[in-house]
Image (cartoon, rainbow, N blue to C red; front, side, top):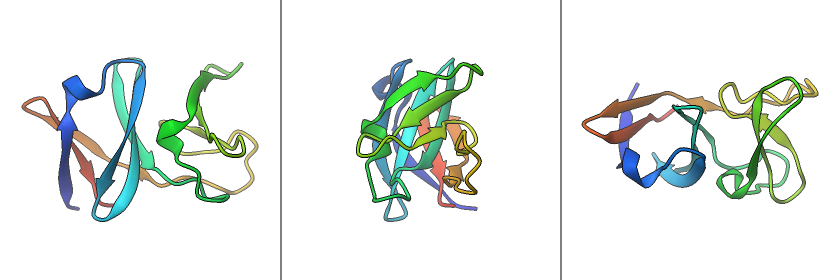
Length: 106
């Protein structure tokens, strides 16, 4: 698995998200609850930019990003949808080295 250098951790404060490009693909980075996660940044419904969506905590305590175009929701850690429609966002591995966020290309 290859990792791409993206941004400094300082550019992604707690409680924020940001779009980056990894191997030519849009990736949404999230920094919530002290953890940085990464999902495919394009909603599978109609291509909405997930990094521009709001992150909300569901009644089940799970943090989900809400696609700003049509409201599809994805768990920011697992990529799963709450309604189990068989749709799941690709989750990228994240490594932090010397204050820089590296994201896998899968």
